[in-house]
Amino acid sequence: MALSDRDRSLLDFEARWGAHSGAKEEAVRAELDLSPARYYQLLGRIIDSPDAVSHDPMLVHRLRRMRAAAERSRTDRAAM
Image (cartoon, rainbow, N blue to C red):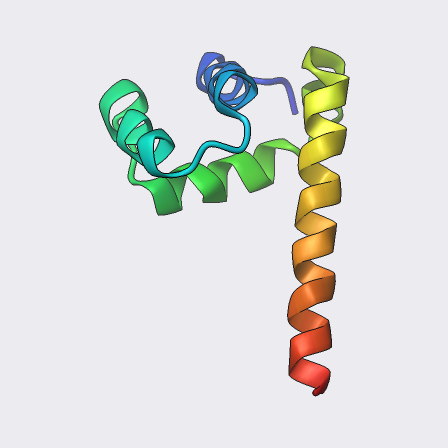
């Protein structure tokens, strides 16, 4: 799956914003015209693409690690 212009825009936006949260959600709405939930849905799909790794390998690998850690945390909480 080749990255679309929108996919690249989302990755570039994420690279700029990193871990910022509150203002980031406002910027998602203003700059990308997306709800934060939709933004994260699309970003989650994009980072599974080999083309995303080619576009920004460090960012994509960081996002994949963060997603895996969140999944482990949810699994651990469910097991308690």
